Length: 116
Image (cartoon, rainbow, N blue to C red):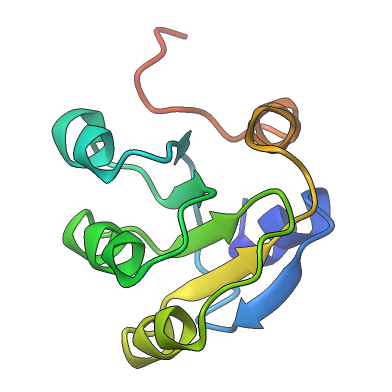
């Protein structure tokens, strides 16, 4: 799945357009960046309701390509500027995290830890 497909599945608005043709295979959803740092491995997409620059820094450290802000939350311009500097795509969806994760799972995106 490409980032543009993630945007379509989530009916998301593109707030910062990185490379929309980047291939993504996994995702995670969390509002706790400490959990992302501790437990997430090889994820491409981060879904979160947390709206601060630490989200972008965490995603960058974990080599993620796309952040999806859930619940229609408005992103701070500082966050968007930081993501733009790092060529990271930022999407915004009206869906709550549980629903957004479910839609992406249904579309074929996985968490990366399942035995399939």
